[in-house]
Amino acid sequence: MKRREFLKTGAAAAMGSATAGSFAANALPVSGRQTTPDILPSVRLGTLDVSRLILGSNPFWGYSHKSAQLDQEMRTFHTDERIVRILDEAFVCGVTAVASPPDERWRKLWIRYSGNGGRLKIWISQCHGNPDQMLSEIDRSVQAGAKAIFIQGARVEDQFGPGNFDILRAWVDHIKAAGLPAGVAAHWPEVHPELQRRGFPVDFYFQCMYNASKTSDYSAVERKLAEATVALLKKPVIAYKILGAGRLPASEGFEAAFNHIQRKDGVCVGIFAQNAIDQIRQNATYTKMLTT
Image (tube, rainbow, N blue to C red):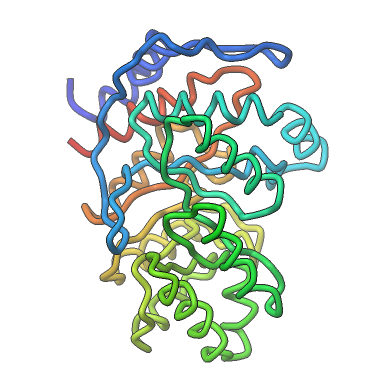
């Protein structure tokens, strides 16, 4: 079956459902069905190899980008125990990394998870603190076991807008001084090309596929601008919000993303597993199908 036919018939989703369990709001996913993880294609962020599909964490912390009600549902559902089960399920599906801000709850959870033999080994920290706290937040990420660090898009744009490139460079340099791969994120399509032109010493970029920070616009026009940005970047790019924060079917969002990123690039996608943890398996299946 050709790739497009595979996606349109829903075969990818069926494959995911056949191999992964589901759980309701008051239950837990069935784990332990598979002991050997699947293998997904990988990309290289500086010195770090990660799967081309990275697990996002916005749903863990209630960042739905849709409504206050959904934000609260996400926060209520994602207990520490459920997050741990999702991390392990992602590992079984071939995902090797999770991206999350280094807030206190997450740092404690990650340290406990790693110390108890957690199967997913790579945390990419998304530092999003106030400018006067950014260096300390980077340090806390290192101490808690992050394997790579990037600066969150809104914080990058706060400095990019007024032209504070020295501040941005100092943050990147601080990550590099800790010996970790360093990255920056952006929602605006003009940010990363300008940083590339200025020779910023980043190892990777996180590019939002919609300019949601500036316009709250999840239109195809905004996605086209982001796709054009990705095409210009020489360092690895991790595309995020490829599903428009849940506004696009997974088949459409994954196909659009992998049709416009390069072999060196990957995607970051979170899941809200209240209804079905199968989303992880489905996303991994799409990634594998669209990259082989």
